[in-house]
Length: 124
Image (cartoon, rainbow, N blue to C red):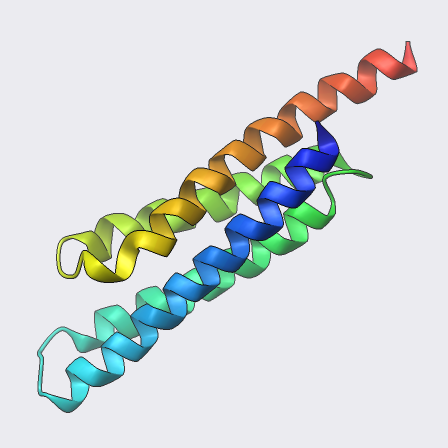
């Protein structure tokens, strides 16, 4: 379970960072065209990069420290949910990697939580 959490968490985080990059680029393009809410896209993109980095760190901790991994992956999932819900109102084209990354981060969080119980079973 923990190895699967590591792999799925890192792949999902990379997808979230890709979606955040698309959002940042989209924000700059909208800013050039004078769109009034372009700063929202830039902010959500930066938050997405932070969430992706937290997901990569959480995914890499899934084998050795599943409790810390599940907390970091849950925080990354929450940040991705906020970004997806905010940007979904405006531009749905940019969200395909973000939604797929969100699903993978949620799955990775569940796998890391199951890894906690797996570690406890092996100890007893």
